[in-house]
Image 1 (cartoon, rainbow, N blue to C red):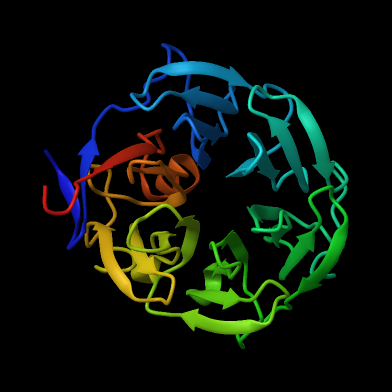
Image 2: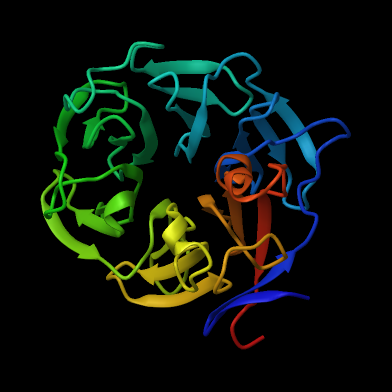
Length: 320
């Protein structure tokens, strides 16, 4: 059994979890979410955008065919709903767990002017606050975090291009802890920034590489735990250099790093990562990691080819 991590955060790699029927393909996985029954929702760029698995990895359902332009992220709602962020369509859709669209935020196919600060230009992720507010990171073509009401009304925004506190260089993911603090993966600034519910800067975490996926586990008995997926290097000069991303890091809500999951170099063997784009944690503390295996790995391989992009990590109970 391959293990990753350290201290109280050691995980066994569950090989072969989440198999698809013959002829199906994830292509690459951009989003993962887990509902209250520990069913796992995988948002991918294959022909079947949303696939649903039970905790054992058995496929239960699929939906969303023809609805999405470029799947990017999943967020589970507190009312048995799911938010699906489509950066190619510049929208966020709130759906039932079987795929009925309840709300669309943004105008399909109509981006705001690039870096205008107006929603949306290639939005990337959604977080739901304790009061039901929605925080949406925006994104590839903007440098903003937008706060919406639960029914989709814009309440305010913050951020601009740059490297100073409160500025962003590709806000790629957003999440909220049980106290209402907002965490933003400021990907190309190599940091996570922390804000209060109104967007006032609180802190930043450094010593990470291209933070991409972001998830807060509010059910960990030791306190809120923040999981950060770090991409591999994007520049040729950094290829083959150890300890530059391609891993999942675990932090306390105060920014203390507890563990790193992965290997010193990118790879496709069990326990290795290249592009951890999305992370989710179930009620047992097990972690699901989705990778954009074609966009990233394909560029690094000759000839480009599809590789496994879904990993389940089963947490070992400390002291067991």
